[in-house]
Image 1 (cartoon, rainbow, N blue to C red):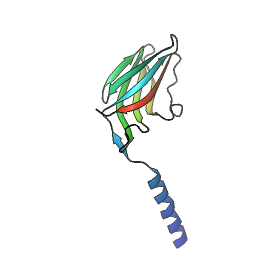
Image 2: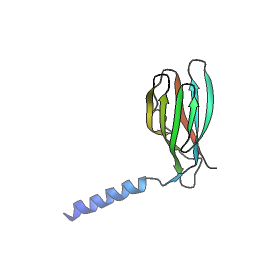
Image 3: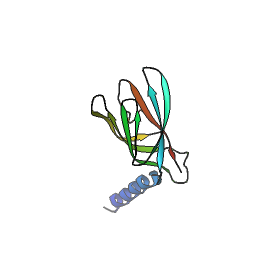
Image 4: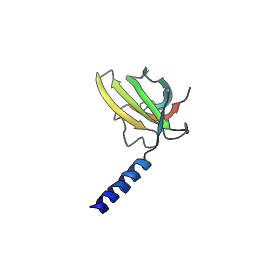
Length: 119
């Protein structure tokens, strides 16, 4: 029984140490691609605000980055609506280093996280 408790403590300690502390940022820099005309735009979006990109309305509820490393891997909580279809096309966390892990699926537009803003 002691062995199981020790193994559980070791595994729990490993999981906790693998998590990285994050700092909340005041905003995010997103990159948007219009696939029809091939134009790329950078979108500076503060937390709690909504930006328009083509037919998309993008709302940011949080942007976080590793403590002490603002150039590190950013992740942002986004809600994206297509006004033409009056439908939500994305809701969740996007991660800068792995945009395909949680990507928005849209026929015309791509959006991905570049970095959090620090001021």
